[in-house]
Image (cartoon, rainbow, N blue to C red; front, top):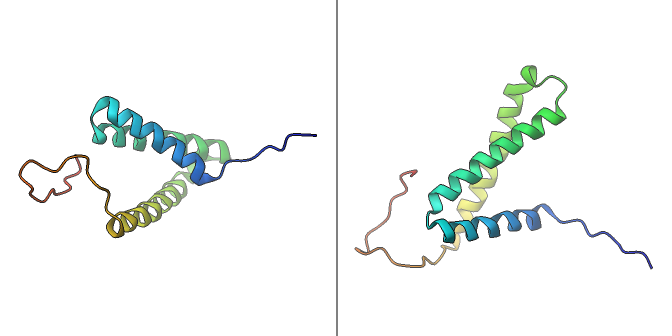
Length: 105
């Protein structure tokens, strides 16, 4: 019998990246640092993807920026909506029980 190769879905691959990010967040105790590193890694890999797929990246750069930005914005919007509908349970409550405001840090 031959072994069938099972290809991973986009979501299964993403789950592996998230699992690593969660591990690094615990290790570094800094979710913002890990999030920034993930965004940088994504930008770096997407630039590589665009370069590999393009015949003239300089001429296609603006289109690539628009396409990748639009894709990211749609994915982020979907995931923000999911977290609005199903908020994550924080590991610890803030000391003052006040509302935490996203400030991009």
